[in-house]
Length: 311
Image 1 (cartoon, one colour):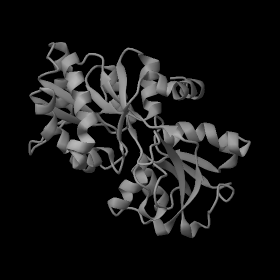
Image 2 (spheres, one colour):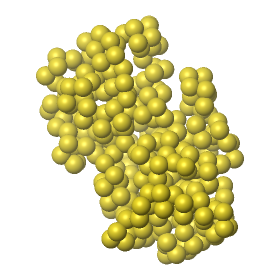
Image 3 (cartoon, rainbow, N blue to C red):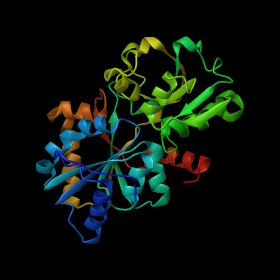
């Protein structure tokens, strides 16, 4: 079972093991999707913040899509959500492209990608951005040679897959020869915090790359950390930026009731206009809205993951 636990907005959270058992029971007893809608939330950010940012789904979705209850399952890492989707214990999640590729490569029929976000400049992609502390003296990727590189999560697109493919091509040598050490910081937010504490010299994370650097750009982990007071852009340098990465998909389980599925997609597409505060809270920054996508939008990332990682 994935490392998940749920909240439905009640004051006391149930124990993780009880909720995991309940999630399995929902499937085993044939409980209908109309009764409970289960939301998977990727790890890598403080759990309390993730629950607070998605609370509006608990408040709005039941009436909008015709279910009795919405439960949030914040996973400890990316793989927790991946396994929940593969096991049929989650109905919806927002994934990075690499995490979607992992699901697809293990079971092409498990989920459908249905929507993705569009940046305020109209782009449907984002960037892996490498940061360094300003007082480190690292101002470019050339300055980072022989330093310690931090990744975010093995299933992250911007926090592992893309830099692990793009950097060797750009540098002309393997990552483990260019950098003195590599490691994982435990997600995007935690990884940047580890860099700020000096445990990594440079750290890759995700960002729209659009807007003002001083603001942390318009969306992404950098912007969220600035908004929470965890990151001061005056104290860091951007030392590398990847090619544009396809924005990650909103996926729905193929076990989901078709009427609920249609109403869910309709609700999300209208969210930027009808519920702008919820839209910004769930997405973690400023976006223009959603666009329709399908598997073809992610075929290059699926191929890259299959080549680099295998599954």
